[in-house]
Length: 242
Image (cartoon, rainbow, N blue to C red; front, side, top):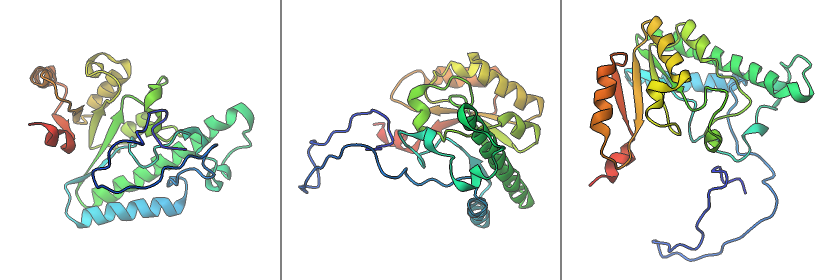
């Protein structure tokens, strides 16, 4: 059963607060189909995404934020995506071990094309475009337990996004790595350097957990001098505090 959270256990016999009672069933094997996911290489998908952005802009937002790490395609089998027709038609005869890398190239190029279209649309309304730079995943050694949150077989060319001026602002985003990685991790430092060289404001994203060192972290980010903001993430965490 493709739960979308790898091997995390699921409690099936916990009390049901609603009082409803029913059956629990088990099945052997794997799902017949992968969970549906929109592929950036499909022209219709890019048109749909742009229509979503247009709807946001029509609503009067200050800007649009892009984050590839999300809950849309949580799956236990991320490496099986990218073999749809729109992708396969663009392959240059790659087969065997080189196939995933070629798929990643095609899909990555398509996603960058979408971001360029999004940038033109957002800029035409005088609004700002912000992209999350995922320190956990934009690296050769992503933490295995976080792979479920990212689409596989796609190359996110964040260097190209920065070079092409697609970012009005950047978010340095960490999840699995410790907070210190913002200051010590080579990938994070590369992101900071590339953005600062082009005058792109950088905001630090911090997941909130019940803890007591936040003030010291705020001070460290503020005193560092390279960052322009601090995102406290997320609303559900605020509601959990007493």
